[in-house]
Image (cartoon, rainbow over all chains, first blue to last red; front, side):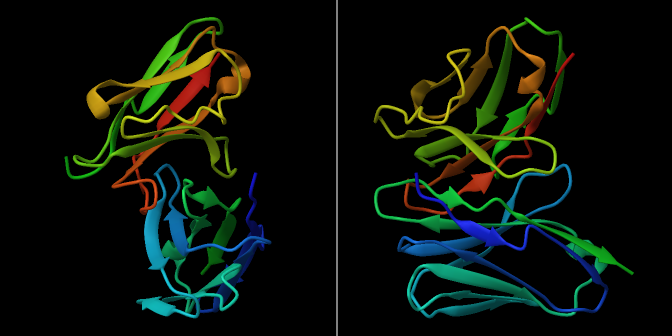
Amino acid sequence: GQQLNQSPQSMFIQEGEDVSMNCTSSSIFNTWLWYKQDPGEGPVLLIALYKAGELTSNGRLTAQFGITRKDSFLNISASIPSDVGIYFCAGLQAGTALIFGKGTTLSVSS
Amino acid sequence: GAGVSQSPSNKVTEKGKDVELRCDPISGHTALYWYRQSLGQGLEFLIYFQGNSAPDKSGLPSDRFSAERTGGSVSTLTIQRTQQEDSAVYLCASSLGLQNEQFFGPGTRLTVL
């Protein structure tokens, strides 16, 4: 089946640093989504992207839908301890359910 | 309801026993999904239901796993003759339709002793 390559697999950063993670695929997607999962909880939708080239912000989070429609990135600025968790990208193609990346585990030390 | 709910939140069972996990989707959502997540790992797709269509069971790992969705709403995931490798968090999600964002429940943590 289709696969999303999400990287990095894990990140260890200091509080205040900026973070960047991305997802790539060999296939075209119509929608890109970014989720965050806190420990012991289900994933929560952070940002949804619907158009190629779209750049969307949600507070300190910024995500972009790649112009080729085969990739997306998520940036977190000025990280804080509560940013800790697993971040998942997900892509949507016509007629199928969401395809999820394997996640990026973020650790923030204060 | 306001969000996706799952029960129980935790389930401890003995190897060989059957378990049933329940998911209540967001009202009006026609699509419902089950995922499995091992500790610190990604989401493993199990099955989804979309309206009255036949479910996509392509992710079920063995014939010990089954799911049903009654009346287009509540879903039950059943694991028969549980094995220790079935221990994981089982997540349910729902969406307005197959092409819409999924909203997740809090999960059921299953431990098979």
